[in-house]
Amino acid sequence: MGMILVILFAFQNYTGSEKEDFSGVKFITSNSTLPHLTEFDPNELNEKQWKNLGFTDKQTATILNYKKMIGGKFVSKEQFKKCFAISEEKFGELQAYIMLPETNKEAKSKNFTNYKKTSISIPGKFNPDSYAVHDWMKIGFSERQAEAILKYKKFLGGSFVSKEKFKECFIINEENYKMLSPYLLLPEKTPDTFRHDQKTFEFNKTKARYHAFDPNTTDLEGWKSLGFSDKQAQTIINYRDRNLKGSFKSMEDLQKCFVISAEKFNEMKPYIQLSQATIVQNRNNKTTEFEQEKTDFSKTDINSITFRQLLEFGLDERSAGSIIGFRKKLGGFVNKEQILTTYNIDTELVKKLLATAPLNTANVPKYNLTDAPEEWLKNHPYFKYSADKIIFYRTSEKDENKIWKLLKVKPEYEARMKLYLK
Image (cartoon, rainbow, N blue to C red):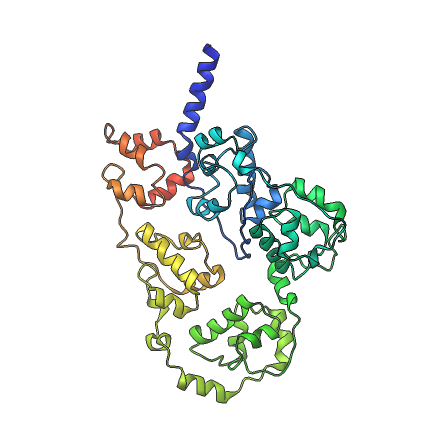
């Protein structure tokens, strides 16, 4: 009995400190295309599939280790959320697709009966490249899962390429893959000619049709015909219309667009016809609100830059909105590195902004641990996970050094929190 009490006490201490250890790990986005989400059971995902969901190597290892620590199985969304590699924002993104009960209590009462997945039924050997949504549904996948499988195929360039690549589709769990594999009319291994790097591969998904063109009059479809993806083509147009006020003035302007690699530029160069007439015409006729502002970004404080000015610089609405939203939650940026941790941003373009625009931190609110407003603590991204403990400890302790010792947060989280303390 005494041993049981000791174990229970140790577990209580561990779970009681979960938040303070789990508080600061941020989900890091990259420039890669995010997966098309559909229902999934987190207990079935392997290392590769977690990475396909957007997690880093370190975060993936943490999630798998956490699952082992809790007994090898997530029983509810509530438990899954406690894994400190899962940020609030990332959990919010995944929550609707997780095939688990909401709470531990619900998991015990339902015992997963409502979360059993339909078994799959395979008619015989088949080429998955020719399967439509209704075909995958006949096998046993849900409609959303079937749509996700097709979107993954499209992401690969219109073919699953190999069994190896088919297996990487994050909703194809290990059990289903083992059942499907003998019937897939696909090569076992991925050909050496397949381009694994997504940015490079996007140039090859659409075969370029080179022809003489003026980059100042080329529209979205025109850029796509030159071998660019939808997103890349739109970025080039945004760069021309917003950053350059409507015209590429020289070959160097075109080279500076970060989605046009040196190799790609050299391929296009013989076909580029940069007409002086279109440069003058676009400069004279361009009357958008972006030109009217004519922002000098070298004098524009990042802590006061507007959504419209970010669009003017060339960011898309998603990137601009993310930066403004994160800045508002923080009460202002303290250093430029924080901006690069913002979700859903165009990292390369933001780096150019940071190299150009200054950062004034004079008006960023800062407090002491002992007098910080409770509402501020509970809402600030860096403090909210420790807010209740701070509020409790400071009722009897006024020495901040002692409060830090009681909080027991990791050094990197403490350093980040101290950015907003006096």
